[in-house]
Length: 400
Image (cartoon, rainbow, N blue to C red; front, side, top):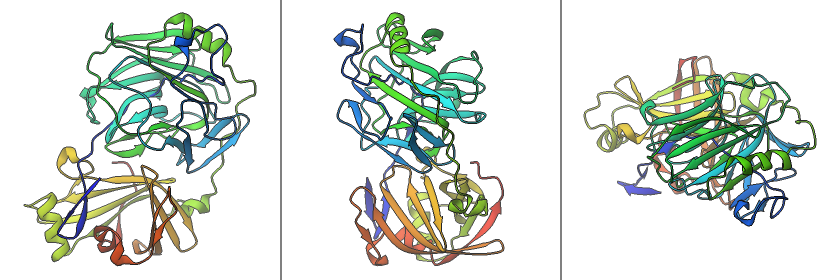
């Protein structure tokens, strides 16, 4: 959603919250031994594509991925899949989310198998965090640590190319959240402050500060959500009846040239000169600013954008400024940035001269419809104004 102010398209405030998944997959209508109450509200087998096996929402894969060996294999850099529009989970009521997951290499500090996004973070997050299997819920659409409630289990230790079944359960009647690993309850904790995440259900990543994050390095299959809190017997039945028949597929190996051989990794700043664009940005975002810059960060196959105000980086509307982010690819002299929602792709001509990166906008495309605009006068004026200029390398660390 955007507002038009002084001819500029300005994103409305968004807020994001992150919580990992509890995904339960059913490759049919009703699992053997389960009652109709245990039928998932939504599920995706992910054996060949993103078609639903329950519910009516498909998931669309993006970035570095492949459907192989009866699973969705993700590169851990840019690969993920998400629903088109709001996800199926009412995150303020009882729910269960489950999935079979595998690491194709050693895990990162944070890896999200399933989440349902808000604007800044996600309402729940199922996966791996701080060296343990993890189910997280948030009290607000915020990346602040004090909003995070986590239940975790350090055993079994993750082993490369080994399937593990994760289930996250939120019980609103008893104000409890629980994590099940391989059919057994591994952790439980109190939680009574849910909020509704209106964004997509996302498989293989989450987001922090409104920027895509926590890309899963491995395979995921048989993801499902339930509109109730499954008990231990139902979770054990899922574990027994949905086990993948095949070994996990290998981790997709990204073509380094797709991401410009890592040459863009780090941060790049365009200092906005005094003038109409500076005045607009200052008036709308930081009225007292004496210096304003647009910062782009590149990390593997992911990118993010923020605003630097008098030396301080802002990414979200928590600070009255908003960032963006997603995945990117390079094809020769063309650089294409896909937004975090996977709906808009912008292609630039790019040229690198030492620590100077020149960008010139070529095309803006609506991904779902395939409609593209090449006339800059029909594009977002802010996007156009920051191109045709030079970004200077400001750091090698792409984190924010």
